[in-house]
Each structure stands twice: as C-alpha cells, then as structure tokens.
Image (cartoon, rainbow, N blue to C red):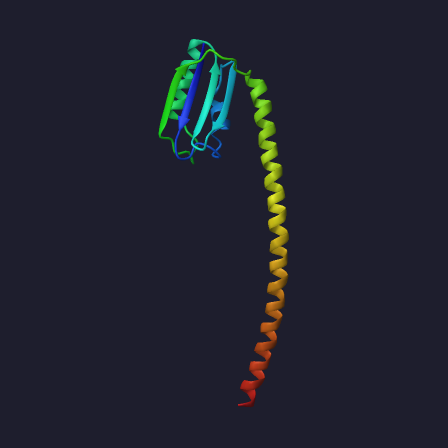
Amino acid sequence: MKLKITIAGERVQEVGYRLHLLSLAKGLVGFEAENVDQDKLVVYVEGDDIALTRFREAVEKSRPPLAKVSSIAFEPFDGFVLSISEYRQQLSLEQLVKIAQTGLEVRGDIKEMKGDIKEMKGDIKEMKGDIKEMKGDIKEM
C-alpha cells in the first residue's frame, strides 16, 4: 500500500519536519518527502497495512517543536516511492549542502564582526585619550 500525505501550515518547512517524519518511518519500505510552495510538505510512503497505520497515527500525533500545522490530509497513492535508504541518502546530501552554506555565511559574519571589533578598539583608544584629557582638566580646576 502507498499513501500521499499533505501537511500544510504556517510553519512546516525549515523546522526539521522531513527528518522528524523519517525517524517515525519504522517498518516502511518507501518514503519521500518534499517541500511544496511555501506552506506545504508532501510525503509519499509505502509499506504494509500495519506499518502505514502506525505511521499515520504517529504523523497525526507527533510534530517538530517549531512546526505550526493547520491540516494533515491522507490519500491513496499509486506512483513510485523511493526506498527509505535512497531517500535517506538524498536527504543527508541536502542537509550537508545546507550545513556548508550556513558555514560560509557564518564565516562571512565572523569576518564582518572582526572588522567591527577593530573599529571598536580604535574607538576605545580614542575614548581613553579623551578620559585622560578630562582628568587633566579636572585636576587643573
């Protein structure tokens, strides 16, 4: 048996939903999940009746902490579904790409922060000079 599951809501993407669902997919032989539009996650699963029933119940009860779901729809599906191992490899690669991109962004942010810190050091030196000058002025009074 195969199912198509559509999860819709304000926040169903970029919250770890696909990883979360994959962790619930025990006993399934096929699994695919893809973000669609900006507010949907579509999941295709394949397995025997018992495994699909368990997965469906888990999907209805369990969500990632940051997810905001408005609806979950289940419908029969006749198309091809990747094996879990194939999907796991695909998702792992996607996650590695995200990690690499985030690392590059962080590196850029760190370079920018270093520049800001150098600028602040200069400002602090200038303020120290101003304070010394003010101390001298106060002593003269």
